[in-house]
Image (cartoon, rainbow, N blue to C red; front, top):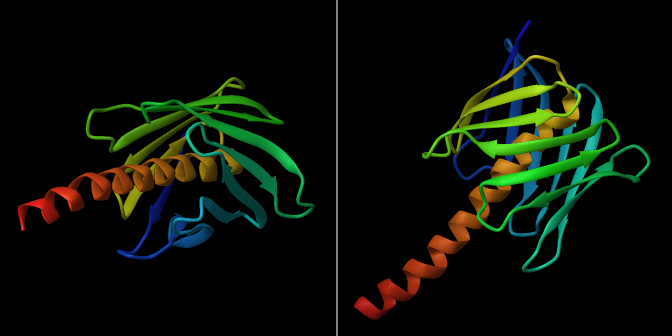
Length: 163
């Protein structure tokens, strides 16, 4: 049986909110340009801390005891990621060319489908895994921030040279 959640994030806001029906069950708050975020879902807290410069990875930290419980490795083309955590591993990837659909598939049979864009979307899962739900949103937000930084780096010099 599939479970459906909804998420939303206001324009220029740093917090994504996750809802089951009309009840908020979680949040993911990013610290803009600091490569870190704090998530909470169903009373469990997690921290995501990205490290490295050219080859980045993210540590997943248990918010209760500050121990590392997993990590995320990204590919260079910003289309895939691998999550390794105590429950196994999971592969994250976009499912369409517009990057509005993405999936996190775990080795334990968990499949979480995400649909959306920059400020709202839907999550469907066959086996609710709170950590993977937050991780799937974090990876997407991470890639969106990288894409925005690249666009700024490309278009500001073009704009300045045109004036």
